[in-house]
Length: 359
Ligand code: KG4
Ligand code: ZN
Image (cartoon, rainbow, N blue to C red; front, side, top):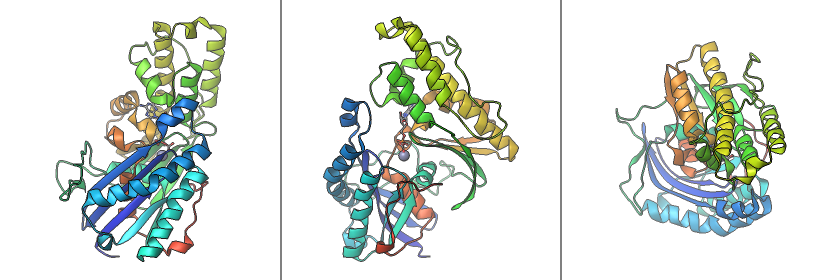
């Protein structure tokens, strides 16, 4: 394996088009640029992601985003040693845009291509330095994975909780590229539950952050909502019953929705959030106890939820790693960190987008 790796990274699994350039040397990786273009505003108009529309937006953004990432890095194409790309899982149309672009660039520029699993990529946001603010067009950028005492890197073994719009999974990560799957959701993902409940409350898309904001002024104990599978003694989750309970409640008390700014609505939002967070925290801490592990890391869009962040830190006495909120949702920096630590270049023509890629 080469010691110095300058990698252009492309991520296009859903409604964000992202690219980054990193340079790794020994134990230090620098994020030279990090660009994200989102079509979330457009999706908000329709109350969710329409796959074909997301793919069309990816097509519009992919070249400008890659160009910006290369320009911001201050490097020339010749300086880039490899290209990494999110191979899956995700929306097939969106993935194809990133993967086919990466394959074409790898062929034309004669660079190796590193395929990365998006779910694993989310975990690697914990190897991205917190509170990072890249200067535009910076050359001497800040470290992505600094070799400094001020930033602690996760040390294996570590329990990982992935909570995104499409996934809720618990893993035991033993080393880079080595992990055991402990459990996951049997129906809806945690982010999906946030989004579906938010929709029942007539909140705009994306619902998770909106519901979380509304919950700030509510009483989490106001409504008694179910905690499905809380005592199941395994590491599986189920969220669809919670969504049904909220649906029944809203149908029984239509006046809840007639007063959008009411305290009752905030109470309901806080109660929904408390239920989801308790399920996530209890199972994650139980996994750490079962395997006698003193480090937990969280990843995925729902990891941006402040209630989850606080409750997990309160409930667990070991070290809790959570990426800064801008690295919880989809971005190329996290895929870059995954590519650096799992550097496995392949011939461009051997890689295919895989919407069903699993952990
Ligand atoms: O990881 P992500 O950006 O995309 C996927 O790979 O799915 O996650 C998106 C999910 C959405 O369901 C969104 O509502 C949720 O993360 N989310 C939140 C918050 N921010 C994003 N859920 C609760 N509270 C938040 N603050
Ligand atoms: Zn994601």
